[in-house]
Amino acid sequence: MEKEKTDKKDHILDVAEKVFSELGYDGASTRLISGEANVNMAMLNYYFGSKEGLFIAIFERKINSFKTLLQNINEDETMSSWDKLSLCVDKYVDRVVLNSYFHKLVNREVSLSKHSEINDTITNIIMTNILEFKKVIQDGVNNGSFFEGADTELCVATIFGTKNFIINTPQLASRLFEKDILSAAYLENEINERTKIYMKRLLKSYLVTNNDQTNP
Image (tube, rainbow, N blue to C red; front, side):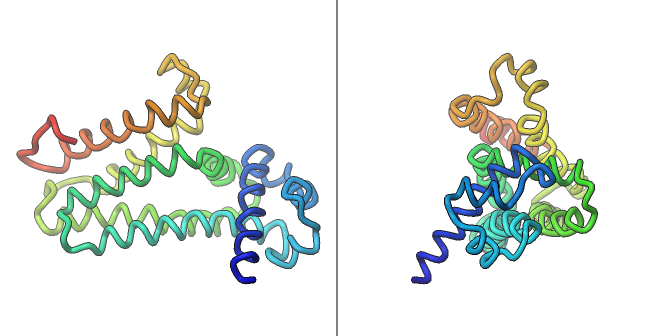
């Protein structure tokens, strides 16, 4: 029974994520989402309470699951600082490509939202993962694995900023790459691995001294 309840909640969240990413918070309605999810309004309200509760639950589910993954990597004492950062980049890029609806939703609401309280809540949720990346890099600086004067904040901005350009400005990115960046097949089969290699070579050349430039 508990699994059925969890599956139903996840289904509603999946549908809501897609609807919110396409229409925005103001353009979407719980009635539309309940119809798309093929559930009644009473069930949706029982699980999430309101449109705001449903909206925030989308972010909490995605961000918290990734936060746990990043923390597990961060706490693995068998891995070097570079191996931790490399794996974090791999996992992040994979999630961006496989969850493009969510990342479009993040960009729309964080940058354009008129709802300051919701915006603040979402920003605080997202910051937990940004700070996990910062911790990986700063720990590497502190233990001598990375360049002592490394600009930790700009390294993090580079990781997240590259994603923002590719996913959130598809018209510009499509012209730059001379491919349809909205094509799921192109994102998964080419951009995904290409982004990982580029990001890791860039970060490694900046952070790690005496590194092998041919091995990301």
